[in-house]
Length: 83
Image (tube, rainbow, N blue to C red; front, top):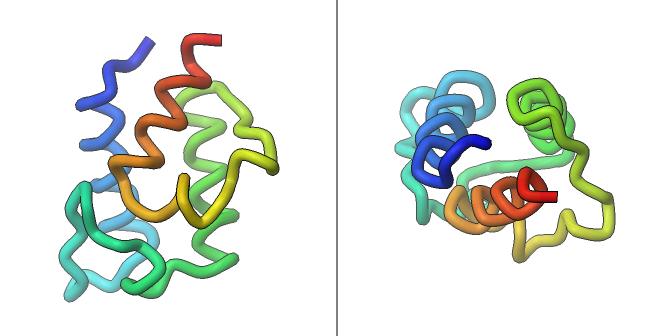
């Protein structure tokens, strides 16, 4: 199981390199929606999560709240790793 701090680091790196323009600074508390996160970004993120952590997050758990920032998203991933 990957520790939550490592999940945060991996997500920040992925978002910075694969989702957002390099001019956008992504931190664990950055509001992803205000930064331009969209449905295409979500698909890429879900593929990353499935490959990186071998989990599938149920659609009903993907809300604006759980996707708001890296902190909340990391908590969701961490919780599903335990199951």
